[in-house]
Length: 79
Image (cartoon, rainbow, N blue to C red; front, side, top):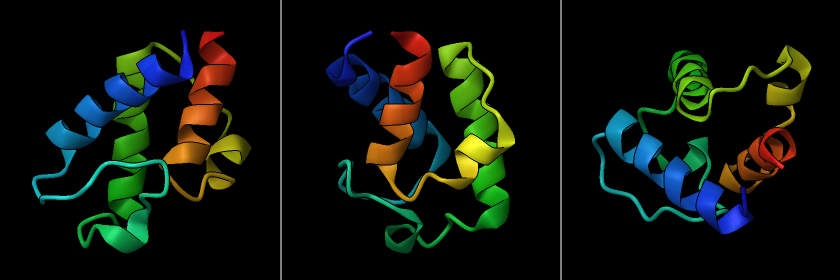
């Protein structure tokens, strides 16, 4: 799966998960979306895992700081 394909699919997950308006970009982080707190982060990761049919290791997710990091992580599993 190409990075662009991951970006588009992940954008859909974010749009379904968060109801706020935001500009989806690789720089998007929890700092940009008020509802994206620690509890929402856990739920979001579960949705991402379901959507992409993958299972992250807990240490991998901790290292993600923004959407770009998450795309890189997903791409690692979907390459």
